[in-house]
Image (cartoon, rainbow, N blue to C red; front, side, top):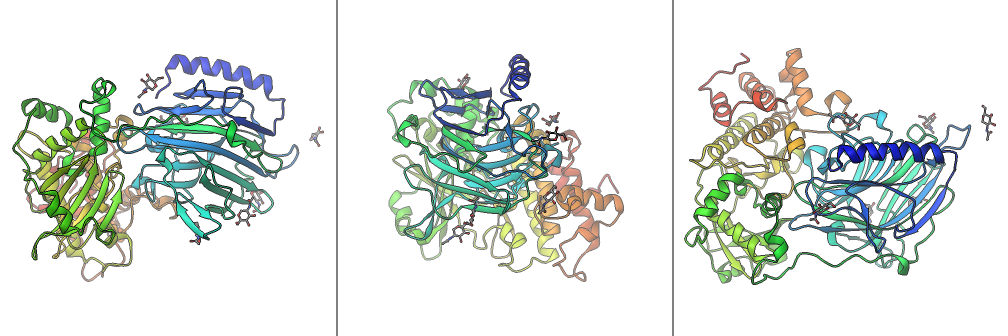
Length: 617
Ligand SMILES: *[C@@H]1O[C@H](CO)[C@@H](O)[C@H](O)[C@H]1NC(C)=O
Ligand SMILES: *[C@@H]1O[C@H](CO)[C@@H](O)[C@H](O)[C@H]1NC(C)=O
Ligand SMILES: *[C@@H]1O[C@H](CO)[C@@H](O)[C@H](O)[C@H]1NC(C)=O
Ligand SMILES: *[C@@H]1O[C@H](CO)[C@@H](O)[C@H](O)[C@H]1NC(C)=O
Ligand SMILES: *[C@@H]1O[C@H](CO)[C@@H](O)[C@H](O)[C@H]1NC(C)=O
Ligand SMILES: *[C@@H]1O[C@H](CO)[C@@H](O)[C@H](O)[C@H]1NC(C)=O
């Protein structure tokens, strides 16, 4: 937590004082252009700039910043059980640190301002793994999330969601606004650094909650981005606090609020845009500087970690830091290494990076399909490096990674460097990613023997990475969308997806933020369950006992009906019960909450291969 225990203690003393003094006051409306004059209680990393700008977090890692309006708001009329309508509007800006943005912020309505024990990163400083989703929280939040946490069911790394009592959204959608003139949705980048205005309105009679976004200079769109029927009577009690919470993780952003208007009687007052503080323009330099700026030179190891994870061409690229630095020291001016491609050849292979060749696009880069020769098809990932230092770091990593060869890895063929950009050239894997096969209906259903073979392939690739000579590699991002399937449906582990997010998150990873071989084993355990059961790790729409796949499989194991957990789309004649049980039991060992209890990848591979028998049997 970013708050020290001393400041927590002080905060509580101050809080109980304030609350007892003011709770008799009934404030129903306020308008802040900037926050210099505002009645605001700040917690954690939040502070108000001399310009009036409210900064919830800066770009340091794993911070939490919150700010609440100083008086509780009476959300329920005295002697009535119905909650009342409210309307709020605010203007925010998110400026990413070096690399990908993270993690986002939320507008929050909460019965208390005490969030001790809440986690940063994906939990946005509001919840932790034990109280996430608990209906006793009675917290309504609207999240502006810039990192995709697959285990929390995030749809992408740029979405707005309505959250009730937890960070798994009831409903979410990619950030966009409705352009009334053109009558179409226009997408918005939350972490663009540009001010964005939000309107959140709840009509208690209709029981409708609407969330609307637009760039600051535009009028309010006629259509909301999110509109959801919700009965908030059970959630909002007489007095609730309103405010904001933001968090960073290993990826970071500066989260800023420029102004805030609130009302529980009628519409929130409109801003006078000219009175809002402006957002400082200090994004990281986008052109290579002759030498890195002094601030970057002084950055701590932590910041190096940010740079690396942001640039991570994922998977195979995430090196254990320690060994990486040793390697780097030895090879400061590494010149030989990964094969180089000319920009010309890559550009012509991809038709000049034509949009029809775009395979996918994420924070960390864009993927294009290319044809090098009549027989050679490649996938090219373009990464833009803001500084020369980042580029050098990346090239050192590429050189190390290019030496890896294993039949279940997506092989890196080489790279090309031009200006600020680095182009990574991979072999092209034709059948796309495993998640499409498992979770959508647009691909053929995988048979049991195909699934078993895919699982063993991933195990083999992970075992290879973990044991690679003197320098074991951590994948750090094991999940279905990072497994590609070739013509014969063999699995090929890569990282074609979300460079900035991680796969299934082991409990200790949430606490430490540090990927290890053990966190890879955990993620692989969850992935095995997804492959066998044909469903995602977390499915909030299922009955409570089935929401968490790991729990559901564990319950199945305890009741002795593990076979019932198998994907119903696999024909029962085709199932090999012995293999299904072997995989699910191995998966349970891997997904053990305690890192020490998990087997190492070598053992996992032997269990699956049948050369070692399971301790459970
Ligand atoms: C963020 O704020 C903290 C506390 O105010 C400070 O120690 C840290 O250096 C800041 N980080 C950056 C990147 O400015
Ligand atoms: C609410 O109820 C209490 C007792 O039940 C009563 O004393 C009070 O006057 C009522 N307030 C209003 C506004 O009706
Ligand atoms: C989770 O948060 C709740 C409420 O803030 C707190 O009481 C609890 O101790 C936290 N749990 C952990 C494991 O930190
Ligand atoms: C715009 O987006 C909203 C919310 O995602 C959707 O309901 C609506 O149909 C979209 N409108 C158009 C014209 O695409
Ligand atoms: C919410 O949006 C719907 C659909 O546009 C609209 O009919 C309704 O009046 C809106 N409600 C509020 C409270 O803004
Ligand atoms: C809304 O929820 C409250 C409390 O949970 C309940 O008493 C009320 O009947 C609900 N209203 C509707 C229309 O469902």
